[in-house]
Image 1 (tube, rainbow, N blue to C red):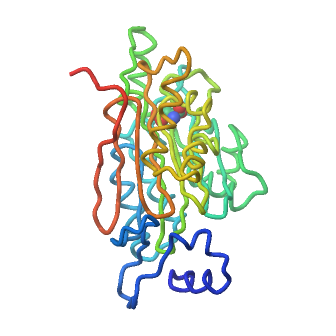
Image 2: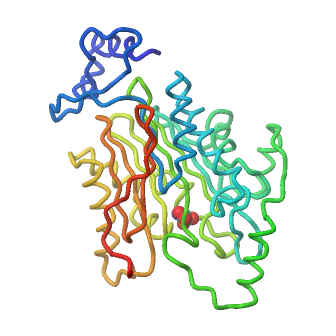
Image 3: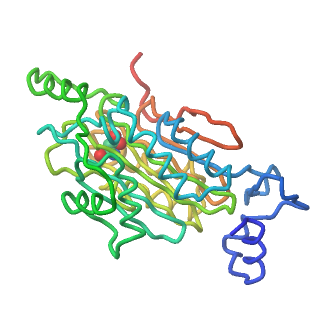
Length: 339
Ligand code: ASP
């Protein structure tokens, strides 16, 4: 449905008012004009749509998704294909093919997707299939379930025509062998073992969906599943309020149901930035929190098209595509890196 019709329908039925208080049609729009939403805070500057944001500097992914949306494409196609850019890139050693393995040398992928209607699909501990995000989408669209694990997920992917591949590359095999032998491995916060791509998009109707895909924590225990494929932890979308995605130490995100928390804080009136900050502080301020030794970062968008991000450690960023511009924006943080 085109945005103009969406606005017309919501005002005719009255249903839109909860949402519609923040979604306002621009006066005398011509068909060539860009879609926009006007922030509820009465800031008169319209925010240009579509918007795509992602964890870290995944600008290739936000560019891909942004271009698809800008051309009038479907939001789930945009998110899926944006994530696929990173899953296929073997230089990205934390997502898809070329992702770092667990300590047994197996690359195991986690992914999920959630749409504007609150439907979702996920795969966990899946091996030998590069595009975990596509399998997650198929779980949502073509099965009565929300999550498939391990062999079941892999077999389902193959049944839909996807090919099995060896996801370990020369580089990740060599690094894993070094890790096994040298036993002097020290994770470097931000760089070495955290880099999940979580993406959120708002299309020209003002509707929000999200996706998340990862090979998880490098050298994790066999069988370990993190936050990324868990709805409410690695990703949550409520199209009346906003969406959030997480990256970093998945165990800490799961323990605080991080992405759901951020969305609920936005529902209570916090901006995306404030909500991300409070969710990070929940982790930092826990009794005996070990936060100095791990990273967690959130990025979020609300229904007014406002975005925000926050992390424990310096070095996290948010890629953002809007109005043909694709930026990497540094996040605010709690702990400054040592120079
Ligand atoms: N959140 C991911 C996990 O714990 C890791 C990451 O973001 O790098 O599996």
